[in-house]
Length: 285
Image 1 (cartoon, rainbow, N blue to C red):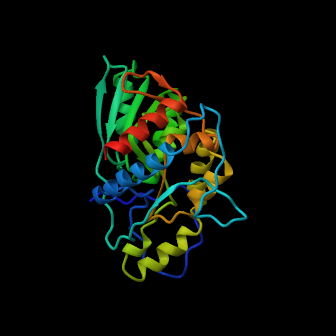
Image 2 (image 1 turned 120 degrees about the horizontal axis):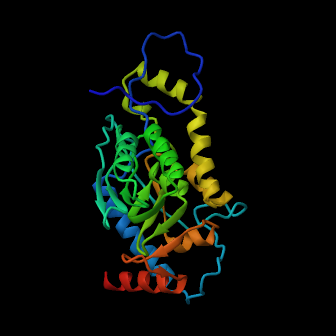
Image 3 (image 1 turned 30 degrees about the vertical axis):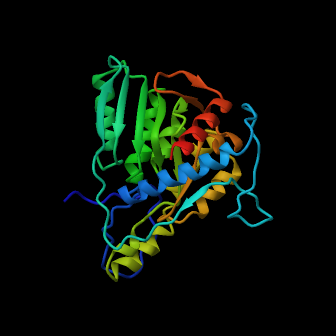
């Protein structure tokens, strides 16, 4: 079994314990069951969007009914989960060259080898200019390293289906951010998986996790650079690691995120087009 990865951060003072936590620190991930719930959430959001008249590309700020009245936030769909009682072992994503070697299709988790696999692929295929990604997230350390690789290579990242947890860092780090019209972004807190450990490792893990601040600040910096406003940053910070706050393209536009929506052929779509497509998708279901 490979060694557990820890989140970026300064080394904290240790308690007088001999046990050391062995949990793989990760950014969380979407299970198949939760993906089904996300699909339902997308249809609910599409129905809501479809009930409004199309307004073009101008952002409109709306209040989140989940937030206190004094602190309005985006109207995200919250998918509730349960804390895992077993340690997650994130599998490695599939990476496949497409479009005559100018794009790479990434499907699956951000596993322990994600960053090294991505770097090796880009070294072997220097003509790659875009990543098409579908991922529920995974390990924080490799996710942040992959985000730095994306930035260094000036890549475009296009979300197909969903991009959640640490996957969002890769999207935020891109030179150009794209989404397909039915794609969603998922935000939540970092998951240290401490509660999946036996005592006393569990208590030691919680203690050390208090000092793992560099990951949080790095992740937040990527989001801010992509235009995520304070409402979205607060939403990410308050969404429990076992839950997912689901955001569609219109909600991201409403809150200042800099990206474009494109179809499978790469044709850019305006807001009215996106809302029409989401409404049609909801009507079909």
